[in-house]
Length: 103
Image 1 (cartoon, helix red, strand yellow):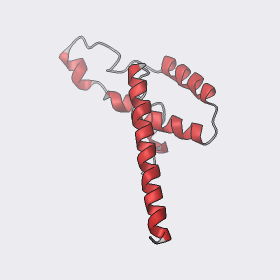
Image 2 (cartoon, rainbow, N blue to C red):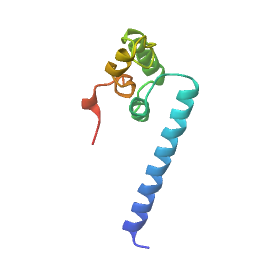
Image 3 (cartoon, rainbow, N blue to C red):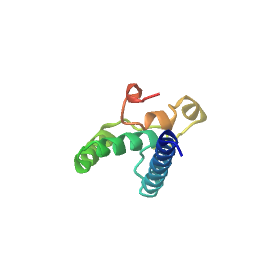
Image 4 (cartoon, one colour):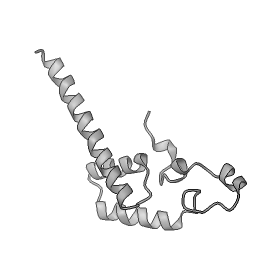
């Protein structure tokens, strides 16, 4: 095999491993009822990979979660109108602005 093919296979394996790790972390997050979406969890994992202190990130997530206004996912809807006008929970649950997302 050419070296380029080996690098491509290695990158593909690394991407697959990262995706599996994120999926496992997301499943654990759901079991623990953290309220974190996949995108936010991915950002937190990336910050940890880059050397951020996981305990400090956890404290930040707790603080931001307690300060965040209730979303449709956490507030029972009393009428059908409230349900149809509520912000989708996947977007509202993210703790980071969408400007941080990479294409």
